[in-house]
Length: 328
Image (tube, rainbow, N blue to C red; front, side, top):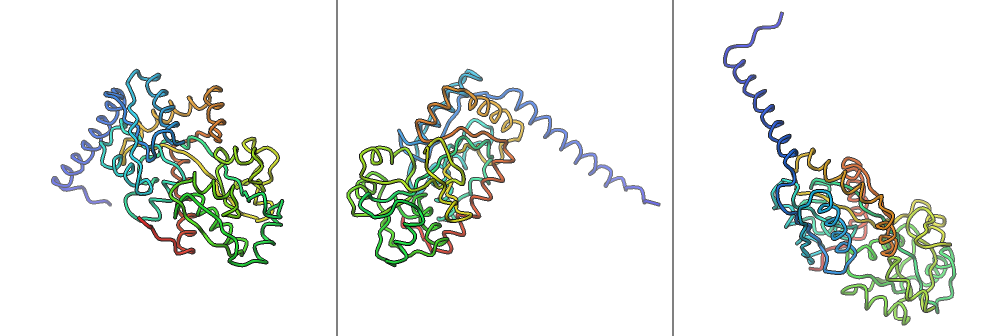
């Protein structure tokens, strides 16, 4: 027979139940009154970058849905940590969003500082992109198998470039090198433009490059595309096979996502998710994303959280295996 609760225990039990009820009620009222002020959409890149363009698309969605203005704030630098910090310190009320990408996840993982993206309040995976394994047109290879064989016959002699240490280009190539057993030398640049110029000029032999900035070089015939880094053929790069056809399991998927400040109530996150996922179904917006070299995605907060955890584990291993450390 269970012993009856003492009077103090019963009082504590009632207090705990009342506290839970009050908290739930407060959250419900907050969601009912949401939004109560303009939105801040923080971007960890400068104006005109992919994340910036997407942040402005999200801002339009929010304004059209609720009538509140959305102010885009560009906070580039420190591999995305400056933007992450601004959102991490914001009130957990759903009015501050962070738009971030693969590069920012890699940056926060590499620095081991600040909260990782899945520790915010993930809203949705916004879009996915692919990179292309590309070589200077003078290199006598036309396929991924030929590139691997050529590199293995010249260990340490080939140079590949990236937009900087720990960036998506860099880690894509590190993963490719590890999985194929080739040995090539990394040349980090301060951004993609000069790296692309040197790839086209022959100072670099190959690299893993996002589709959009690579297109002018492909059209000019100075660079040759060998395969896409996602695990399926894509309309973003018609006719190109996945690198994984040659290297089973290889994938370097680019993406953009959005999250709210840590601790934002799930009810508010769900409202934001509903507006953004609905917006992603707009055909005109999908065309604009395609022009950026991206395809609309859209998933639930829990699915996006699990995606971020898997991505963090994957790239943390690549960083650790290659002993890549921050340079800033």
